[in-house]
Image 1 (cartoon, rainbow, N blue to C red):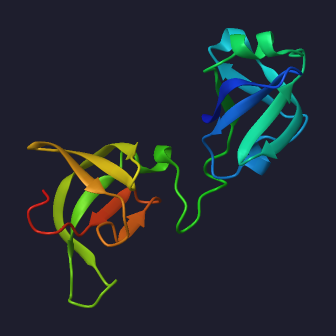
Image 2 (image 1 turned 90 degrees about the horizontal axis):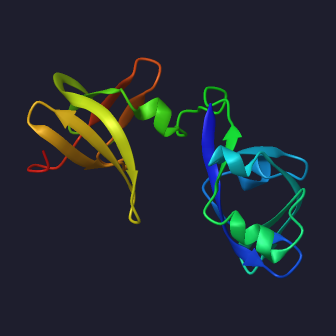
Length: 176
């Protein structure tokens, strides 16, 4: 599956390096020298990485055929896409948005012990999106009463079962 892993920012220096807004949790695996990335818009790529370094906390990449500042500026705001096998990268605590979308959401039935929530049987709705907000990610759940937003934190989302496409939530009173 093609996923957005970065966005080209402004040019850095005069030799064709671009600043990169990283949109992946594993930049070393996504931006190795020699890797070829697809682009959005497609007319700007594909781009092959020829150099990479971090300068003052900012990832700088050089691309084959891009040798000056003017050429980088023409690529500004281009999204970088990588072919990622999202199923191979799933673990008990690591999910891609593609795994979460479409999951049925059920209300938790807490037995009073922290972390031991089970399904109450009451289906709330279906996850339609995951918003990446500054404080935390937020689940967008389509319910019979419209869209509901639930912070995607362990206290409110104690159980995620990707295999069965099921999520159990324990929202505080009044959230839904």
